[in-house]
Image (cartoon, rainbow, N blue to C red):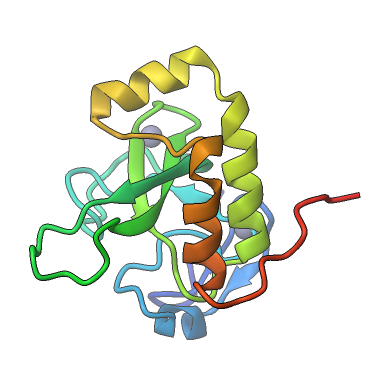
Length: 159
Ligand SMILES: [Zn+2]
Ligand SMILES: [Zn+2]
């Protein structure tokens, strides 16, 4: 039996079991739908972000990063916004989600690096969805988006 969240916006991450408090709802995104620590999500939405109509409710794994192209032609950032790609561990639905200000940047980078080894199956499914997975050639773009244009770029060896 699954415990119901205490209040809207509070939930216990199904993956790392951290409590994601409603304070994290104030993170600059309207629909906090993934854990800021491990970045796993939950398959809640059926048609669009925040609709909460999915019957699946299975954990969704962060499998890679993509760029959402802004539709506004006056947008200053021509490259769009960095997004997480989530894959449902049950029904394999893919969805893309905004990265929140309080998401763990190191973990976002780790998802990015793991995505270089994505199976051809997942890559093919991303293409079906029209999702372009960022690859190692996009490393600089990802670092700039995560750490800012002027920031020191942290060393990438994890040893
Ligand atoms: Zn988590
Ligand atoms: Zn699902």
